[in-house]
Image (tube, rainbow, N blue to C red):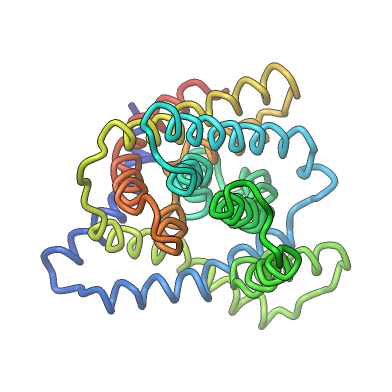
Length: 313
């Protein structure tokens, strides 16, 4: 119970404050978007830069950590896609969007603060090694899968140019820039002047509360409507099946260290991120399912995260 009160509820209290401000206190969509833009374009990339630049890559970037998390994620995508196609009768493009929601856990806005509150800032090394590949890998996979679904399995005529445009779009993302810049500093050992790290650290301290508050305002837009069986499947895949696979692989197959197992399972146990809805909206497919899954899974994860914290060593 202490884990629920001391670790999880403060995080969701900040999300709830953002939700309340947007719903009842005049904090309109423009203000919410402004907070999220500050967090995702400036503060969070700075947090990723600082985190990745200080990670001990030799100790923390173990192949078993990546395989445990990403095998679990892609298995959740496959199960979500097949369920959408063959149980719920959705078309290939809808099924890709629904599978993407099963795949894309909220590793940054929820996974980082909950891991930090549960185990301390020094426990975030595994989180950052996972996050370094998270968005680039999943967005590339999702876009390619959607394009193939649109062409019914036949590669488009200009598939090479499509992949080139995907690559350009990904490397221009602020989050990816933060990760890659931090990786460059880490690998080169480039020393940073004190005034720069001081300014960065001020932005880093603002990143998580601003992102969580903005997330609460964003969730107001996602009203659960219809398709409840499909939504329930997405919720189960994202906050139950994905972390269960990661725990099984990390504990029994790859024998991860305790800090690595914590980072991998807690990250996998997070609800689908807002990007799951943005991906569906980008293609105009399964928007209602993905939006509702983000909201319902975020609420349900209050309980499931507590359970995982009791299971983890």
